[in-house]
Image 1: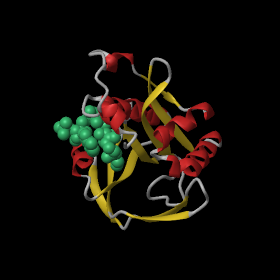
Image 2: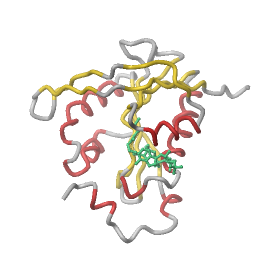
Image 3: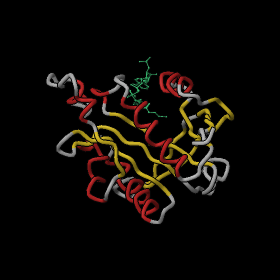
Length: 187
Ligand SMILES: CC(C)(COP(=O)(O)OP(=O)(O)OC[C@H]1O[C@@H](n2cnc3c(N)ncnc32)[C@H](O)[C@@H]1OP(=O)(O)O)[C@@H](O)C(=O)NCCC(=O)NCCS
């Protein structure tokens, strides 16, 4: 069975689970949970290098946790990228790897995570949040539009990464780049 299905089938979500969620930055001990019992094991090296970038102050890795440190959502921020139009280390930050476990989607957690992360970026002096969203992911696009993002460019979405066995995998996922101007506290 697809491991993510175990969540979808869980019959025992308490009605107030959203109130029990803690949103915090990930530590090294959280990295394995990002693999979702194997479904995302192919991203192991990507997650490890994202964590190293976070340790160097170049990225932020956020998670949403239920009591017992159960990871049910994640959102990564690049503060500095070699593509300065996405993240330039001072004004622009880039959001990626945004994912909520299926059983918990559509209940406002993604919106809440974005609010927390935006406030954190504003406090760090960032003004613009950028992201790439697959052209066929119309549901996520609707969420981003609702939260104030606008399409600014086409992205070919061609990239490669080494999986957990060191085999290079190529991704082709045409995307829209979307951007949002973050409010400054004094505005
Ligand atoms: C996109 C996502 C992170 C949003 O988190 P969430 O907790 O579901 O979001 P909220 O409950 O705050 O907002 C709900 C909105 O999210 C979007 N959404 C809901 N389920 C979704 C899904 N399976 N895939 C993509 N977007 C979804 C819809 O716009 C939805 O609004 P609607 O209920 O009016 O259709 C989450 O749905 C998810 O993990 N989706 C799959 C992975 C993905 O598409 N990530 C974004 C990559 S750019």
